[in-house]
Image 1 (cartoon, rainbow, N blue to C red):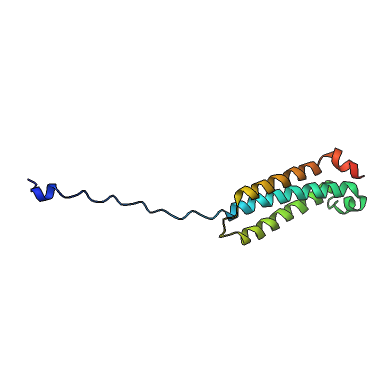
Image 2 (cartoon, rainbow, N blue to C red):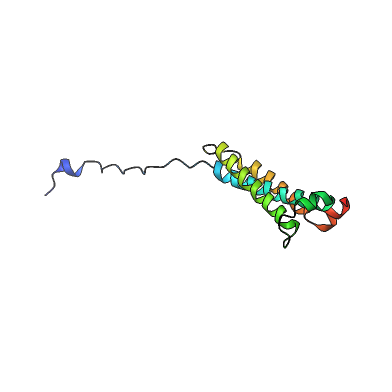
Length: 124
């Protein structure tokens, strides 16, 4: 049978959960911005390729594909390089995601506009 001293003891403390620090958002921000940069690059290269026959011919890296091969490969290279550089720069940082998302959205819209024929035909 329990003694009065045992009955009046306070309950043992509840252990507090161990919280891990939140991982930095820099790598995710780097990916978002690199995607925006790549889409803008695609629009820019498309417009330049259509506006100048010299650039259009220089972008034909594969005869069967035409200038699309150069446009696509340049865009992929720009994406990978910008992603690597931004990830290295922001690896342990927490850049402002709202500003990066807005900047990326603007770059994506500009890049998409650059791929529309009605836009790049204005420069021919």
